[in-house]
Image 1 (cartoon, helix red, strand yellow):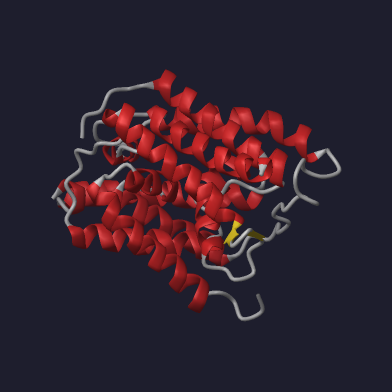
Image 2 (image 1 turned 180 degrees about the vertical axis):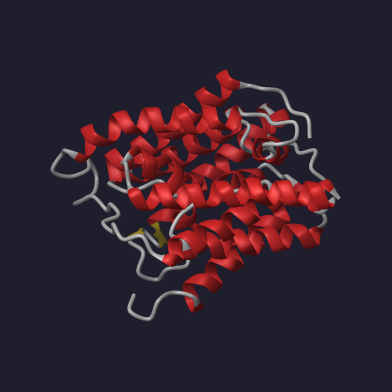
Length: 148
Length: 140
């Protein structure tokens, strides 16, 4: 998979993510961990804002962001990866289970956790990065999934 | 009302950040994870940019008595390193490497109408539901 090295826009996008996490922390005192926020949608104990849990507002904002990206910068969200539905379902299930068992994903553990010098988040981040590198190495070597 | 807007705005900026960083393109993620292939280190800069900003703002904000709109901070307090943390992280990494999606970009991609994200996100939500319903420690 050949992609261009884009350090400047990557860092700029990262800074925006950091800013978004900052805004949520400053206003609500919450960690911007997306897997935890998604899980909160199903949790009947989540704090309500009107009829909906607060997480629904955050997700709503993300959905609006996704729609605007599709309208004004479709090249950022169009994908060349051809993955069968079966692989996608398997990947989705594993990501869903893994992020909940491990209590976080790239945003909660990666961005927010590493910034707070959390040892738990460092361990989780090393774990998912290592597993990600190994998975891509193995699937490419065996010609599976994205590489099949 | 402003409280609601601030939360939604956080989500909005988050999604735009993911787009600008191109984390919403799974091929970009796979290329980052492909250390021994055509490695594209761009995504390390996403993490770098985000951590740089949050590492500066977090200590300043968390020193306040409380956030602006809510009564208290809701910050993780656990310090223990357990097997679930490592196994869960590894599982997530496997799924991430298979599909090229982590939760935020998957959601943003689905909202943007990316077909593969349409399939990935419902599966991910089912995984989240299953884990929280059946795989949480009994003491929790």
